[in-house]
Length: 339
Ligand code: NAD
Ligand code: TYD
Image 1: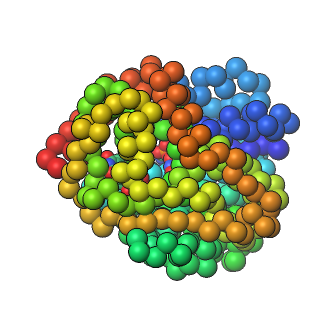
Image 2: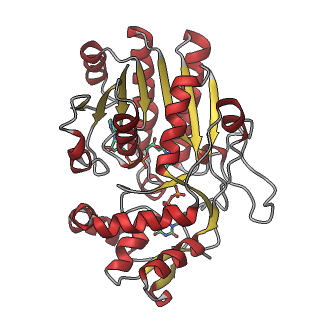
C-alpha cells in the first residue's frame, strides 16, 4: 500500500513513519509535511536511505499541494497527523489552528472524495471530550462521551472530527478516527510537559508547573499509539471512532517528580506558575472498544516508558539542543517570562 503520513516530521507522525518502515516492509511510506517550527527533517534522517520512504514538503491547507500529492503518489491510505498541536499556543494565536486543523483536514477530505481513497484516518485527541472532574476517578471518556472542547486547539480538532464523519455520512469517504490520550517518547518537542521537564532539568533550570500541579493526564508511550493506528487502518471499520489509552493516569506533579528522581535532580527546581487559562482538570480514556473489537493492547507501562524516554533524551542531546537554542528561546520568554 501507498501510505501518506501527513505531519510525519513531527513527534507522533515520525514515530509512525518508523513504525511502518520497521513493521510493514511491503508498504511505501510518503511523509507530507509543511515543516513548521514543530517539524524537523533531522528526525527523519535515518529514514531517508530507506527505499520505501519518501519525503514531500507541502501544506495540507493548500489545495494545489494536496492535489499534486494525490496525482503523483496515488495514496491508498492517508493518516492525518498534520496539525498545530500545542494548547498554550492556541490560546495566544488561534487562527493558524483553524487553518491547519480544520481547513487542512477539509481539503484532504475533498481530495479523498475527488481522487478516491481506501482509508482516510484522522488522528484526533481525547481533548475533544473536554475534561473530567478530579474527584470522580470512576469516570472515563468513551466514544459516546459528549464533545466539549475547552481550548481553541481542541475546538479545532473537534471540528476536524465532525468534518471527517460528515464526509463519511454524505460522500462515503471511508474514514476512521482515533482519539488518543497524551503521548510521550522520542522526538517530542521540548515545548510539551515531559520533554520540557527533562531538558530543563538537565540544564539545571526551573521547571514551571501550572496551577496546583494536580491536573491529571493519561500518558501513552508513543509506540503504543502507533500500533493502535496501524491496526485501525487495516482492521478498523469505516465510519468508526476508536479511543486509545492505556490507563496510565498521573498528576502532573507526579510526572515532574518522577523525571527529577530518574535524573537525580533536586525537587527545588520545581516552580509553581500561574495556571493555564481554562486548564482541563483530568483526561482519562476508556479503551474498551479498541481492545475488544480489534484486540489492541498497549505494551509499555508508564514506569518503563518514562525511563526509556529519559534515556533517549540523554542519548540524543544534539537533537533537542538545536531546537532549544533557536527561536524557542523567544517562545519561552514570551510564554513564561511574566508568569
Ligand atoms: P507535532 O506538533 O509534534 O507535529 C505536527 C507536525 O505537523 C509537524 O511536523 C508540522 O510541521 C506538521 N504540520 C503542521 N501544519 C502543517 C500543515 N499545514 N501541512 C502539513 N504539515 C503540517 O504534533 P504531535 O504531537 O506529533 O501530534 C500529531 C497529531 O496527533 C496531531 O493531530 C495531534 O492533534 C494528535 N495528538 C497528539 C497527542 C499528543 O500527546 N502529542 C495526543 C493525541 C493526539
Ligand atoms: P502539555 O504537554 O502541553 O499537553 P496537554 O495540554 O495537551 O495535555 O501539558 C501536559 C500537562 O502539563 C497539562 O496539564 C499542562 C501542564 N504543563 C505544566 O504544568 N507546565 C508546562 O510548562 C507545560 C508545557 C505543561
